[in-house]
Image 1 (cartoon, rainbow, N blue to C red):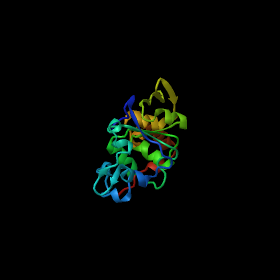
Image 2 (cartoon, rainbow, N blue to C red; image 1 turned 135 degrees about the vertical axis):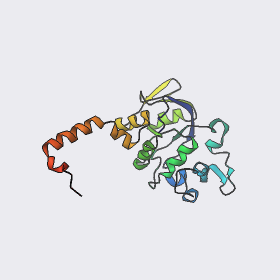
Image 3 (cartoon, rainbow, N blue to C red; image 1 turned 180 degrees about the vertical axis):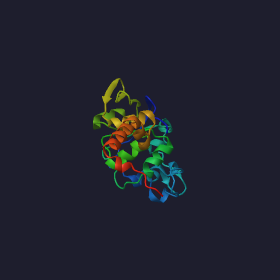
Image 4 (tube, rainbow, N blue to C red; image 1 turned 90 degrees about the horizontal axis):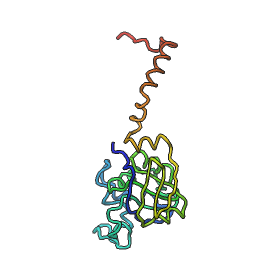
Length: 202
């Protein structure tokens, strides 16, 4: 797995809308396979295209504007990623090249899906998000800071999620970092309950 860039610097594309739901991020009609590939073209389709079927770009949408065309960071309002638990929304964002989202708050399932797919959700107060929107931003995961216009905004993240992002670990990889502790526990348990570990003859 790819670790989160440390630090990540880029222009933050402003999509400053509250309650952006997963069906807006990737409409069901754009989910044409069961895999996680081929979704980027349909990302934000209702807003990104003035004619969805013909894929005519909407010039008013931030990601269609030249200064944000290759954005790796987007800013949003509160309750970002609400609606269904559709993980395809995160897959679409990641395939497009989005590495981080800075928003006032996130829907819990969407936030968890982001972390499990190495996309960093950063929750900041509204005024901080608005200060970063459209600007060059540096996200320092190690220091848990967002820097913009010579200002620093701290953010919180679960320690295990931080380790997974920093080291490119999935949930199984993270568990295996505790291999020595697991082996020690099994040895101690086998000493106390040897009958559990008896092999049955076949």
